[in-house]
Length: 246
Image 1 (cartoon, rainbow, N blue to C red):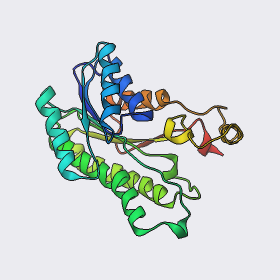
Image 2: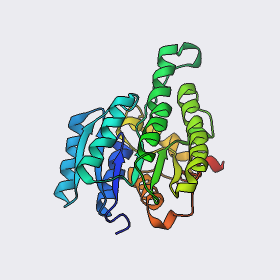
Image 3: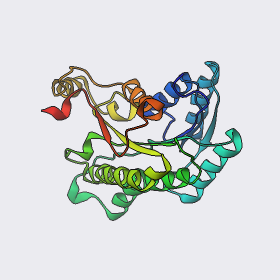
Image 4: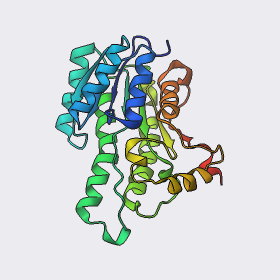
């Protein structure tokens, strides 16, 4: 088991990529706190983990709120006795034209996508010992632009800088910090508005000829969280089926 005896926090884990990561970590014998703004969704994921013999607790958390983040980390320590891994997965991507984005909408995306990664990483790093892992779930929007997602692209580009700088600063503590940049992934949030024609158009742009799955991202996260990735830090691994190669 790659993550046996490890303890993790996963944000935005009520569905989609976060849920897939939680289930993959549980399969590797990792104990965890499953966090999401939707408490019922968290509890459903925890129930699924427990049905498979795993150990997890649910925690409702607004990751743009430092007080709630601190409570989340403290709850993990109290329940499991430590913290080895945090996966900063929570994020939003509301489509809106650049000229129509309000200041409030910009701030919300930055707070949920970028500030949360900073706050969660900071709170977790204070509790981690050598061998800790911080994993940020970024996006290929950090390296290419998408119309209607100026605020999202900006937040994910910022996450790349955050990943590199934090990795450098805490390397002397032997805590690694890396990011995963998914491409087009079949999740409830990402594919809800796509009809079959739009899906086919998306797939046509992907050299491997299919959309990704949550499990594709989850296995990359398992690797980065494991000892197999102990000499990798400050990097962003693109998992997109080759989309950004074109």
